[in-house]
Length: 233
Image 1 (cartoon, rainbow, N blue to C red):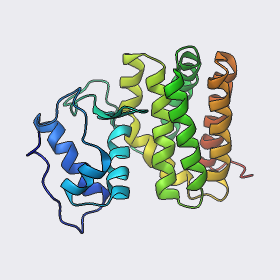
Image 2 (tube, one colour):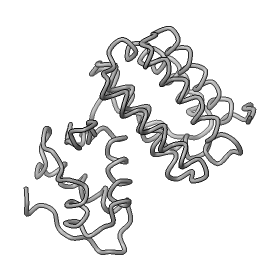
Image 3 (cartoon, helix red, strand yellow):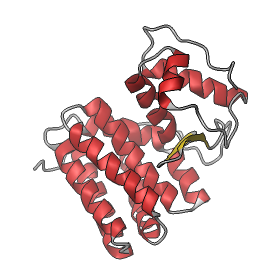
């Protein structure tokens, strides 16, 4: 594995770093269960800055290819799916934006309810870090949406359901594009950070009902923003 990482052109951005790592995973040079080198060492070997590497890793976490475990490091969890029947290939045009939130509203409150009973202290600590990063990125939408997506996926993982995780991973790209739209609306990132803190408080209390309600309220707010009925506060 030591020879698999090659320095990238220094002009490369996070997308290039993510594609390089994605290629290593897809080719089998990195296998499920493999741990990535420490951030500083890996950034040096790829020839990119640590913030650039961090953003690339976040993207692959959102895609479900990597998993960051609090206090342990970043691990490969699966190779890129080919022809995965659970992958949804809908687009953000007309009705599909509604369909996206039908799916999210059906699944994510239940997943959050399930996570409230199963989430670990390490996972809660990780969510606290993500909320702090969101608060620091309120005026930086490009960074905010990646941390936002990472927060949601961490909850999906904490629910301990392979099937639900696969379905939600299948709409991750579409969800990310939805966040790209909503994050440009005035006040949305600040309110989203506040709503995520409410979700975290419910999870930390291990209160399934409150967790479900907090996630549903958050999704309803974002749905309203995307279809033009949201009220920014």
